[in-house]
Image (cartoon, rainbow, N blue to C red; front, side):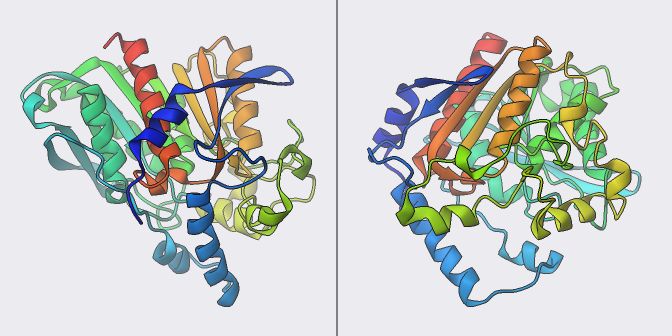
Length: 367
């Protein structure tokens, strides 16, 4: 797959459509080279149709091993300058995990603000290294340090292990700021999907002196219960053209709250993450942040995909931030589906969303 044309990225980045959806206003970003509605971006369609055809030809039952084998990313290097890379290991309650770091080589000796990235993968799959390219790009674009956490995965390390790992990383950056070259007054978190959930949870559970001052949430999972009808969920909320209907519907499995209960995929995810204690923890604030007191959350950017089952709960979460008085900005990208950051450098929406986040960080931190 070829790298995307940066002119398409710029077109997405530079255009906004403000849309009122009930109690909130969100920013809509159009597909840059398509005027049709209800359609996938042609790059997204190419990617997802190939995957969907393979899945239909070889249907398999859910398994942890299968999810880990098939969870991959295809990110491209979009940096234009040399990035210095390093790593270190942390230990929490006997669990060793690695944290990767990225910084502009020309700034490697400076004390800089830091962003910590937490990858997605349904709490039980993927690796930090799969997302090194968007992390490197943030390091270049903002001129800061970016740390990428290879946290402990479920079900071998169930809740709250991953949250503890992220919290330990925040504390480590703060207490070892001189050694790591980190400006301890400017630490932020960003993550996608399950990683966005963990970013919120780590802010809620943070007991260190460190203060997280920005949160970037890409298509976050914020409600692992979904059954109390805190918000509506219905297919009519998604504008879907007939020619893409089957493929789009296949991408709306996550986060359903339509009164029909969790589907098999969601049920397996939450069962594995909770260590088989789903009923006991599913409404914990650091598992389903829609039940949390959000008044102390930092400025938050929420970046969602038009065709994602989690989109509805993510929008509800933004409304909760509004009600809690937390400054936030919600942006929805048309024509793409869940996990579009997996194709950073291929889908222009992924690069445009990272640029939007960098803009927000720059303004919040006065960079």
